[in-house]
Image 1 (cartoon, rainbow, N blue to C red):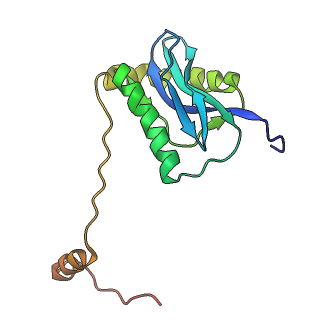
Image 2 (spheres, rainbow, N blue to C red):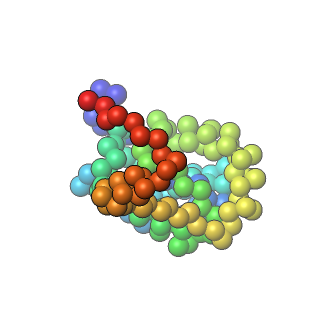
Length: 146
């Protein structure tokens, strides 16, 4: 990957469609890129061509990834999110992956139709958590590691 101009295919999610679709553009490290779909039968990957490199999961990059998936969810009722930072060397590589994953996608599509993925993160104050833990007789006390 010494060629700075080398590009790869960034994948956001899988959807059920046979139509060519776009879900608008997005900004990644101060450059705008367009989304499009790559297809196998009635499955497609929402993707974009970006520079081939490792993208750090900082707040801006993670928000961009989630924003694209959210836009897809507004227009498609069968979305299989793909984790952040997956880049393939070529469109052909994505299509081969999609063909190999198709049996799982075919099984998943009816199960997820019309459903969304929701993540929940709970953050507690340290003092409150310490108090709860110390009050619980089932919690074994361990010496602090130095």
